[in-house]
Image (cartoon, rainbow over all chains, first blue to last red):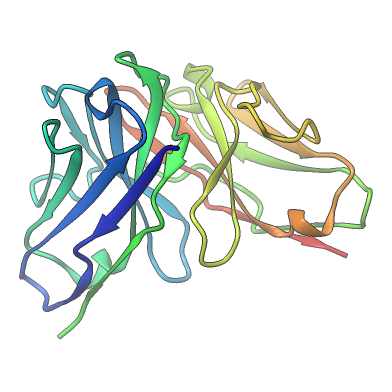
Length: 122
Length: 110
């Protein structure tokens, strides 16, 4: 069955970097667009980034543009989120999620990982 | 990319029906039939309930239904059950492959 497993979360100081990974199982990873969504403590869900199925296109929320980079390795079935210049307000649980459209986005999220906690604190 | 507006909380009795609104603009909710709704229990990953405005993905109870009028989308939960107590979020496509979530609604079952 479809499974998404995030890793790489932890505690990091403001201004530093961290890379999250999302390992995908149970589906043809290279045929689906993927996303990162986060939830800060006591706040709602926030869409962070998107990547097309083949890695040719990426899109970002204004709050992370220029600091975060989404990428994927379709040979290893892994989605990444490189987070640079981290700020206290980036503290959140980060979820990876799948678009259900096969090679053509349907613009919603059908499967989610369990989340990885990132804490930015001095 | 301002968050869509949802009521902070909605409550209802067992068996009752409730409706959660989600208000955006012509640039998101009103511009596309691409609103989705998610249920999130504490400490868990979100679960999709409604996609493309009104469609229920396979396996989702028919107690959940979605609709839209202008710049406002709505989620109705009928026959409220104890396990429906959770946070609910709307989400809309917002052009150029970006998305915007709602502020979230806490549903309490009385």
